[in-house]
Image 1 (cartoon, rainbow, N blue to C red):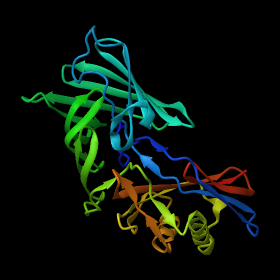
Image 2: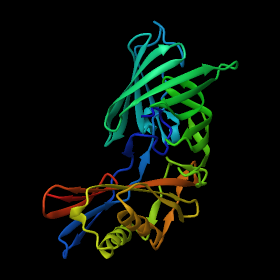
Image 3: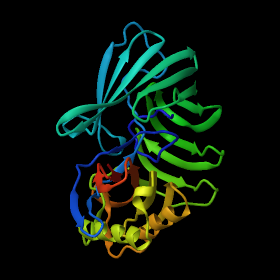
Image 4: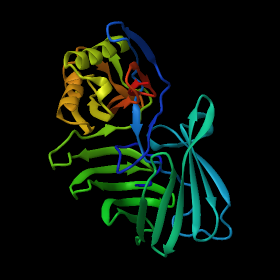
Length: 336
């Protein structure tokens, strides 16, 4: 598990996946199959959280026991009125700090997870998380540079997953160049940050091939599909029907990722995780053959490239398929 803070990004290991948009659902009844579909186009953002509340290297007796900060679009620190996330930092002692992360949902702060930072020595922290999708332990080492900036490295199971520059490491506040790696050691991305806000990035696929550069994971206005949700819903449903997919026999998830470009086209369609060639190909082809265009995302009043993620979960519990629905931007096929 990689523990960051408020910048939005692709998942590293088991980074938390959360829908930061309210669900915009459309219901579709397929009488022949007796399926009820509800499809939401709310964007899933994959992110790690970055928060700045306490000094980077030393917590003393003068450090407040509890502080809170608020995070807005693209990792920007903001006030409560503009916040998407809130982070509470609780200093338990000179060696132990707890970070609690909350997401604003229906005007209420909902706790996502907690992180426990334990100082091992003057340059190393052990980080453990508790909560949904926060599994694993990260070893974070850091070094103070002559200009008082910091460099850090995150290691999970003896594998370097990220390293770069920051202004704080507990919690992590990115500033400068940050490099991420796949489990096989290949480079995943090289990103530039300014005061924790993503500015630019270069990206690669796990096999080393070049991927699309300079996309964002958070925006002021999210992409939307034209001619609308119903057409998108119908198209994806038709793809699975035409392929003869036996939905009740499937269990697991397919996660599709792609980039909505600044001109409204989509590119870089890929399987992040899948269920085998047949199911994966149907999911990918559904987006390749999609007729229409996207209204691009906007950040600071400018159209930007936006990385979109669509998880599709297949859930089979008994023998009769009763529904398939989209909940929180994740498509669930269920049999009960």
